[in-house]
Structure formats: C-alpha cells, structure tokens
Length: 192
Ligand code: ZN
Image 1 (tube, rainbow, N blue to C red):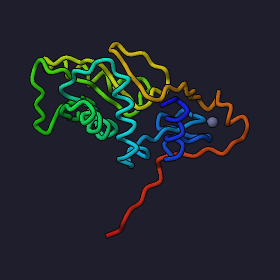
Image 2 (cartoon, rainbow, N blue to C red):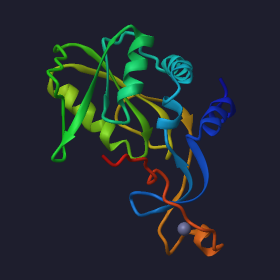
Image 3 (cartoon, helix red, strand yellow):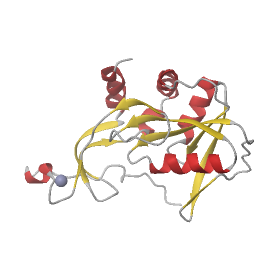
Image 4 (cartoon, rainbow, N blue to C red):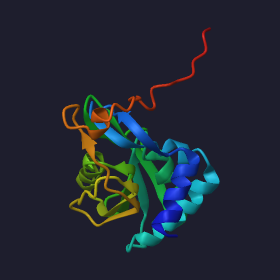
C-alpha cells in the first residue's frame, strides 16, 4: 500500500483530521490523529497490521507488547500477524509496569508497538521494561510516526508524517483567526 492509500483509510475513518486543534499538551496543531477511529474497524485494523508487519524486517517474534490504552489493540492484531503472543503494559503512578500476571520469559523476542509515535517516550519505556525482564526487544512498530522521531531501536511505521505543533504565540492558524477545537473531548454518558 502507498502512503496515500494508508492516509486515505485514516481520513475515511476520521482517524486523521485537518483543522485547528488544541492538543492535550496545550500546543496547537493543524492536524489531529485519533487511531481509535481506525482501530474500531477490525477489518481495517487487520489490513493495516498485516501491512505494518511487512515493514518489520525481524520476522522471528515471540511476543508483541504495547502500552495501554493506545497499544493494546494494535499489539493484539500484530501478534496475530506474527503468530506471537501479546501483552500490554500499564502506567501506574508514572511508572510503566507489566501487570495482570503477564509473564514474558527471559530470552523472548519482543516487538514493542504503539499506535502513534510522537516523542516515542512510552514505546522506549516499554522496551526498557521488557529488557529488564531479560527479554530481547527486536524493534518498535507504530501505525503512525507523526513527527519523524528516531528511536534507539529498529523502528517501523506505516504512516510517516511530519506534523508541526505550535505554541499559541507561534500558531499560524491562530493568526488566521481560525476557530480552535479540542478533539477527543466529546464523550457520551448515561445518568443512572
Ligand atoms: Zn492556534
């Protein structure tokens, strides 16, 4: 698949939005990525995961591990592509942990995955955790690398973007007077 075809899937599903957005970091951006919107469709997730698996030079993978929440579904689908097992890590009081009695044996070959790489910080934290268990990190895989970040592990990503974020002072969209929205803030609730 070409970058255009992959981007088209992200646009069709609402996983890639264009506009003027206030990010949770407080920065502004002309683009917003919400991988949950593409992962909500198992068929599209399968197609993209098989495509991402092709991008990973290492084929000998025992486990695929991603951080909650963003990495859980992708880890599951990638583990299917590699006929591997999958687990997810969780952040508790700031520390990345492997809970739920997941047990990754020392010597296992582990692919770390994340939905979107921005700084790649969480993926690297997962990789360090895996190494602390005596397992080997064979690479990091992501659906989207939104900033062209380079990590200290072999890294594969499906959609390679270069999205700029701005402070209020430097935001060109603010200068144009374009109304800003906070994506992902709308939620449904039921009163009991
Ligand atoms: Zn702005």
